[in-house]
Amino acid sequence: MSARMSESGSFHKVVAISAGQAAALVNARLSSEGLSDVTLTGIASYGRAGKGDITFFMGKAPEEGKFTSKASAIVCLEEYAAYVPEGVVALVARKPKVAFAVIGRKMFPTSLRLESGSPSDVQTATRIEDGALICAGASIGAGASIGRGTVVGANAVIGAGCQIGRDCDIGPCVSVSNALIGNGVILHSGARIGQDGFGYVPGVNGLEKMPHIGRVIIQDGVEIGANTTIDRGMLDDTVIGEGTKIDNLVQVAHNVRIGRNCVIAALTGISGSVTIGDWVMLGGCVGLADHVTLGDKVQVAARSGVMNDIPAGEKWAGTPAQPIREFFREVSAIRALTRGKKVELS
Image (cartoon, rainbow, N blue to C red; front, top):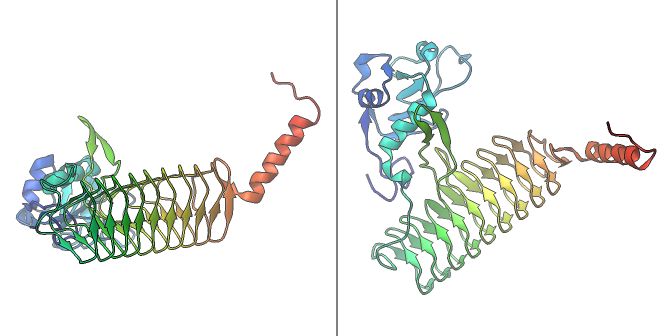
């Protein structure tokens, strides 16, 4: 497989193994020894897995009576082995997510390595259109492509296989890896795009690192502020929608999906697998817990901590965040207590 991008869409080289080899690696039991020779060529999330992929399942028993994933192999607990459909092999493990992490690292060993640049400034295999400008000290990895009218600033590092569209501004000392970037994108100085996410699972020997084989996809017209970090996806992609503007010093974790024309102010932290709709506005220092969903045109006030989903069109504030009218009623009530008669504290 190519070291630049595998057939699964990952930028990382995949090492194919059999279901039997995967089971032996993590001391798991196969639900069917007759399927031990099934070849595994990728890892994927439960809902996106297809033929040749291995995935894992943790949660409630499926209501359909069988697993609906199209994966070739599923790592699961003993009580769920009976839900595996015919032709799919279950790897029964005490800690499915830990087992999946170990198997994933074996299949995608380069996903754990940091990309530090190219042996020479510009690799001969790169595709740079006429009219693009590569400034002094910039490193462009093998197989990368840079569109017409794009400027890559001094000492920027563009990783192998990355694609950057036309009329983009890539600031000095920016690093880009595992990423596909559209047209008219601005990355300000020091932005970090495509590093792996903060994904660990407790194991017997300590914290097991999850492999991150997803990408960062930045659509047309996006602007990313200085020293902002956008992690690549673990199994799925991290996506920044068309026209979205992100301020300085923002953290966007793995698997986050941000819609179109959003505005995200400085020092905001977005946890993993958050979904944000279109035209959303987040004030400075907002924190979003993992897996929450914000509907279209949501507004969140500065320094709010969002712990729950927010329906479309609503305005929330506070920590934990709540509808803004409820927040101000609480503030008014507290002020009335403290500014009225003296309150004695025991």
